[in-house]
Length: 207
Figure 1 (tube, rainbow, N blue to C red):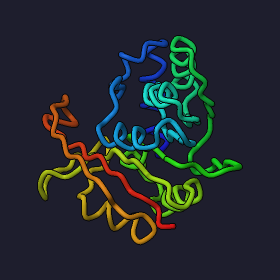
Figure 2 (tube, helix red, strand yellow):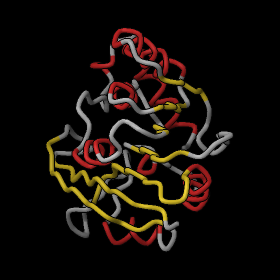
Figure 3 (cartoon, rainbow, N blue to C red):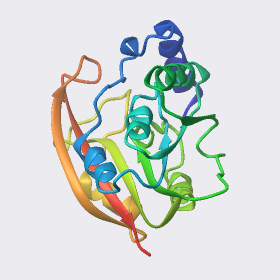
Figure 4 (cartoon, helix red, strand yellow):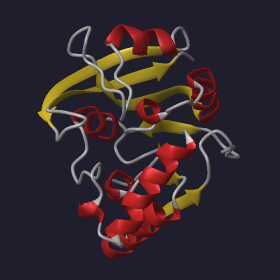
């Protein structure tokens, strides 16, 4: 992530002043691919929510019995996550660190990325992939939310990077095998919109 992108994101978190609903990318409800992945595990397993933001999805997973670690670069975001976890009465381990430096002692059964990869402005996709592989146990799943391309000219000079499904699959091959895809077009304000394609992926790591 570039220095400018960090400053912009930190500004939004600080301006929210502890109110997640004021963060533009905050969502209360998880995507279908995440719901399916967690329900399939029947409340068992370790999950890493990388770039957890305000912590809504981390708390949602903890409510369903998962052992959750939530990672983010911004203390203001983690404070909102801790407040939500306390309100809901669930345990979540919140970690303030850069995803490129994070090295847990044990691997995870599920890694959730609901916006990190497409926000790696100036970052290294290859190093990101190595980190995901370091985090994931054999047979584990990556659940990825990423902005897709609706057509060849679907791009913006600022904001999250749009990538085609073919590009995403190529990034993670051959170690991660795609199993499910969910595509949803939604309206969002300019300069990012007016229409954005959100794509949810489930990948399984080859044993």
